[in-house]
Length: 238
Image (tube, rainbow, N blue to C red; front, side, top):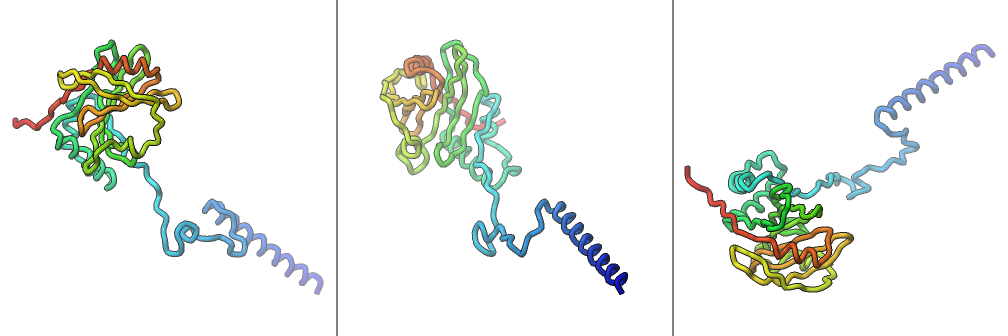
């Protein structure tokens, strides 16, 4: 009788060991520990209530860089957006439509000895940024970014004035060459960390932003050497 009881106890221990082994193997497959007494809660219940399914957050459509004006022009006029997500297609089509309605791109050139870099960047509209076109220059080993933005439809001023929390340090009236005409533009400026920003309107629908790791005096000097020209890109018939 004693032998039979020991045998049964041994069988029970064997089954218990096998059950525990199987549970651990299953946990290793799923990457989770066994759920003690049903304490695990569903992701949908934690995020949005029963029946809701969480959707991953995706970054907003990003600026697009081009090696030349012609490459940017071709993208604006005839880009194939079929490979983009729905959100990207809508953002880039809206961006291209803004440029097409203008019929030109405002391009900046600098009279100082400089090295054009990342020739042209197109910026789609975002929560804190209007549609724009930008470029980089390196002047005396300092990088400067020039961006010409479009005041969005239905708005009277730049989104930067409403969406950005800016503590302006002052205003400087600077003479700028725009479309072969010398015009005086009042620029407001401010510093953020190591960079200085200058902001001003080229006309009632376009405004200019320049930033660089330099003093306000130096950036004002750089702006005086910048020319803005309307580079038209109407589609030509072959």
